[in-house]
Length: 158
Ligand SMILES: [Zn+2]
Image (cartoon, rainbow, N blue to C red; front, side, top):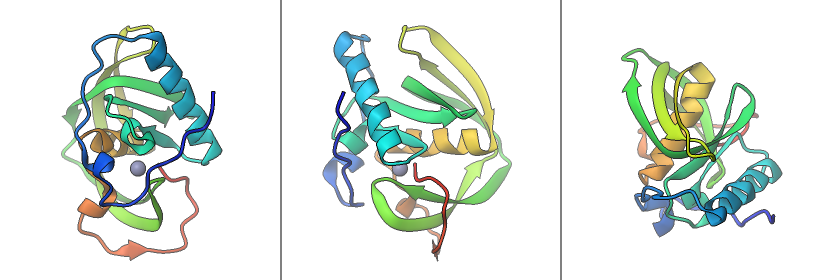
């Protein structure tokens, strides 16, 4: 299970591609998720989405409750109106840290690697990571939020 190269650059076409739902969780999909997990850990990130490793499947992984969680075909079905700001980095945008507004709470549905449908209500950091990764699956990056640049941050990029 090799760590994969991470695609960087806000104008990289794959990072701007809307991903496609995964019709079936095959061995190949499970292998991709394992490679993504290795890649994220090696890069010291807290989340990673398929386009960041040059793939078009609607798959991401995220640290949720400090547990590495694969999300297949995730959909955010509800977002709180209440927003909070925090600094975010992105493994695909090295050295850039931005203040990004995110809903404090969300509900996300997805399939786990066994194909079981899961619904989670998340808040604060967990909700933020998943919103960041689902943005990736829709071709959206943190630089698309109009905010000023922040320097000297030490949290894990997503
Ligand atoms: Zn990112």
